[in-house]
Length: 281
Image (tube, rainbow, N blue to C red):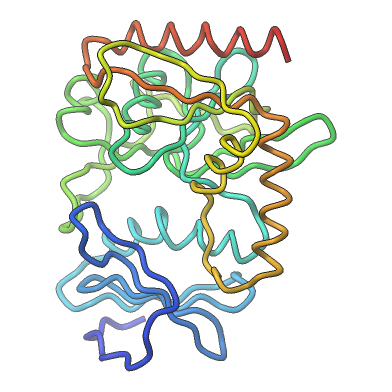
């Protein structure tokens, strides 16, 4: 839609997301036709009740690269949640005849990990938007947009500087590195083998801890994209579906030193742990 200034909204949002610095990143509102999502100073999106369509109004001064960035990383996953799909704040790579996924809050290193795996020959499926689809014998990890968002130091350390980049956006210094020869992408669904939940990073060695029961369920639920946080029927259904996932997919807490020179050792340790859970499941 044509750019427009953000008019004051009198009604309080029913939900909001905060940025890492504590400022408001996204306000969630509703109206009779659906949901109104406001990214302060950047853009407004309106999502239909059934999650099938979104309209965008950029704030004057922002460009379509901003619109695409917000849509791919925030709005599209929220639309999927309205449609009943299960999509998580997680990244995933193809390996060991399937996929392994990395979950965690922003800054925990998901994108660096998947880019490291991809650069070493294990194509990535998705960067921070993992959709799972139930099959009779497990869950399939679906591929998403063929790009990875990385800080400049990560892109340099992983030698992705020769890869194509999406246009920069003003509100983040992260670059979107597009898939290519140096960063291969897997475009086919893969069965999910294991889920690794990245912890704080205050560690001097690599450690794994198997999550069970309520710990596993809480870890999965805390990473689920949900737009309508007031839809109790949907929340209940999501809870049941995620509980089934947590019971069937090995869930592993992972802590490790955040050092680029330790990525080779980290990948080997993760693959070894994933092989172990495959063997005993």
